[in-house]
Length: 154
Image 1 (spheres, helix red, strand yellow):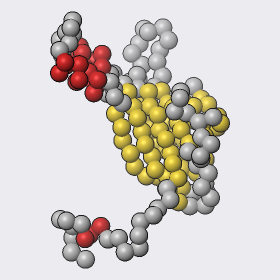
Image 2 (image 1 turned 120 degrees about the vertical axis):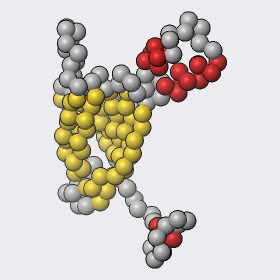
Image 3 (image 1 turned 30 degrees about the vertical axis):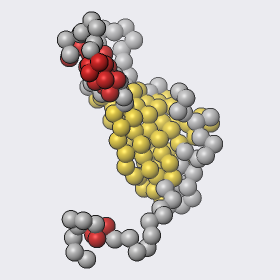
Image 4 (image 1 turned 180 degrees about the vertical axis):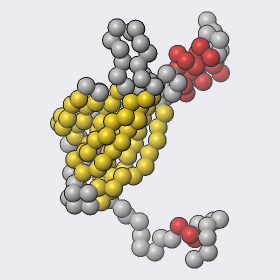
């Protein structure tokens, strides 16, 4: 919750959207579960949201996603795969610390009329934080990706 913004923009049974003072928009989303525990819940859950990102007209936002579920960002699952060691050795502890880190992905989304359309598919028991930051593209006009080592000839 500390990574969410101060201003609440939207709330649903499976998500919360906030805005930070600096203009970033954060989405916290979770896969639905059966509160009785009788069923495991769906394998996948998809949200489709149109988020107000504050940039006027057109542009792009940088999208950073951090996720945990039954396999990713889950030290308990890693510990079970290790054989549930009673006293993990230092190397095993390092692996468990790494396994506890959320899985992270990043990309860009187009902005139309100040909104970014975001589709998020969650795995069973997944919780994900998506942060959208307006892109201020500072790429110099002379920059040419093709000139990088191994790139195509211009």
